[in-house]
Length: 307
Ligand SMILES: [Fe+2]
Image (cartoon, rainbow, N blue to C red; front, side, top):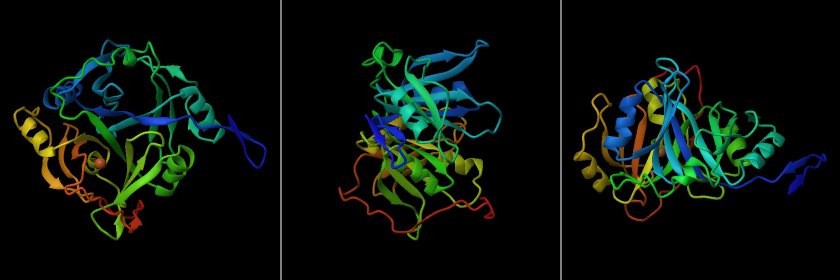
């Protein structure tokens, strides 16, 4: 199916986006971060992809059959920690053609990834890299369905991935206007300002969280904003489960359970790099949804000093 624009250009229909597939982070200590996710958070690691020098290109920790956290060795000390995030589509090549027709910054052809998934990359207007993946029968990921799903997992689902957004208008043009995400909630600690905006994938449940900011962020700020969220039924139970395990030495202190602005209880953990893992209740504390903020979305202003 194609859509004709008013200037006669044919735009292919957008394929479905059915979920958030993975979060990929750089780390200064691959083995430490692998232990954090495996021994402490209870996940299995079905795939370790070697690099050309006999080291690790990345390790894939399995949240569930369709969601992973990918752990990459840092390219240089102190570099940004978010490598990319991925969404799942039902037709990667059709999505690539669609994004090209929409004028987006798309990587080369759709290729078969290390785990057998069809994939390509698109860079959003703020410079964040979004990977588009399609799980095909016969791929290593699909062949692993039903396996490596430990009973020790602290959470069975990654409900969202959050990342820093410098220009919220450009982000909306891309994620809402082109990819079809829809806004489900916005909020922040200051009622007069919007710091977080949740956009839901168009044909699925998961969200991305646009993390807005004004001042140049420190590395600790960036680690707080570029994060992943693991959803649980009872964050108190998750806390008790983790208390019986040992977090690898060197991780920043966790932030104990608190009630979020969204009225959901949350617990925040940090990898050795300060990358935040938010563990959050699926439901609000009393079943009542938190209203969206009517504040003004924050905008990055380089003249504002960092914290
Ligand atoms: Fe979050």
